[in-house]
Image (tube, rainbow, N blue to C red; front, side, top):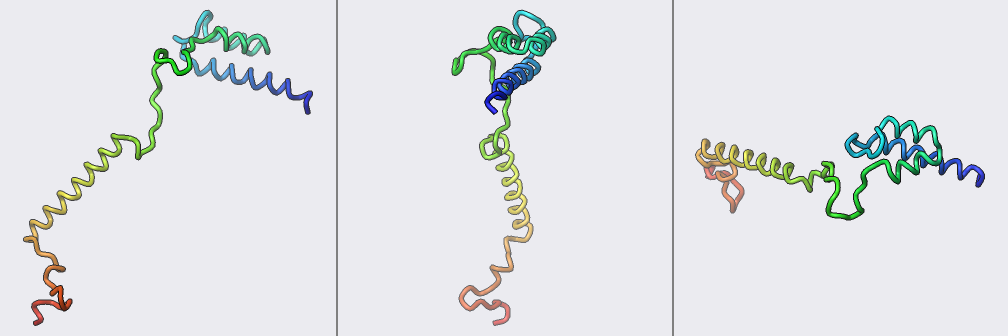
Length: 125
């Protein structure tokens, strides 16, 4: 099993560098065109991926203020201000429609026509 470990690490490094190269926008690739980097990574098993990771891509400092702007990422609905605003707007529309419905009825409900003390209808007394 230990004899297989170096081969697996090399394979993992090559796959990582290959996928990283393919996902890198063309304007962030340094020194050589992207297609040449892919060939170097695949042909030179140890050197290719290491050189790509070291010199093939513009990289920003970790935690630095500069560098590439963050990509738009998915935000959970309870953290998304646009989603929360749409919920508030929808609730306001429902409340407004309910108020208009009550105004058309003259403000009378069936519950208001019952006697609260006895629980009987007022009209029956």
